[in-house]
Length: 344
Image (cartoon, rainbow, N blue to C red; front, side):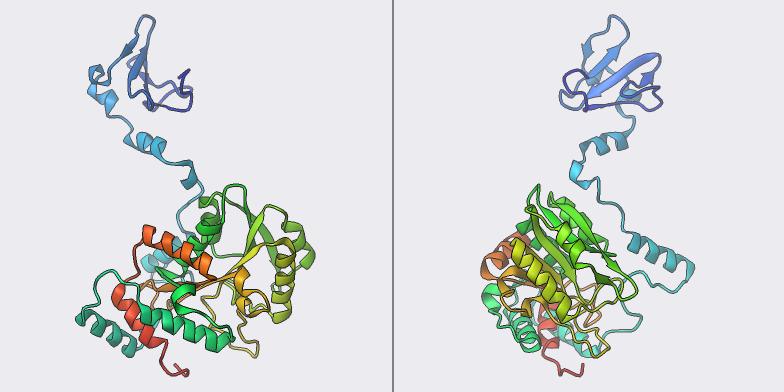
């Protein structure tokens, strides 16, 4: 197509695209003008209704692919879910996805059942859950949190992180990711129009090199995504490491989006330290977490983000536009579960 060179589709079997051979006649359809053209010396533009039915109906998948936005080109099927499917088909032990092989506590289930029977079945922004999140985080990390203005309930931690990235990252921005990493991070950054920049964690202790982190950050860097405790290595970032990241980010005026979904899975003397608890980092950090791992309810999709008022409001607005609300009865159940005794 001379006018729209990237907008042709047609029949398979061509020698060279975009020409598609059909009964010795080259047939094309321009997605912009929605008309067909037959090229065989003397033929001119003709309407699609005048073409043979078999030509008009070929390759619906090609038409669908042509309709896709370029932003989804880097969003590929999840290798984690594929491994889970393979394990299920073969009866193998599944080490791919982060969910347990035992049932959840009956008390948590009962809280959800009672919430459903009590009428918590419509759109909801559960105030009790926001209060529980703020109270739990403040108690564990010593950081005061305003439940009303600084906590956003989302559909799982992944949505919290995605909404944080969408709220902050624009085309041309760069986001630093520590590698190895959870596969979703890169896709989220690219969907927001940003560019992922990778910094390696080095075995056996999975430490990062300060010089490599410094080199990865420049005037285009909007944020660093931190995951501690870390998936997939299990590394717990030390206070010295977090302080080094904070110093670099402060120098370059960039933010930290901290995925702390494994915050309660630390089995050594090294305790989980939230990046937000570091001096002067509360307004430069977005914490994302969820009930999925702590209460092993990965299918309930209850997560949250903690951020300063302005960023929390932006995340909340995006969440409402994308999902409206997290599942109402599960919000109520997790609000109660967060108030269970600490031994749980």
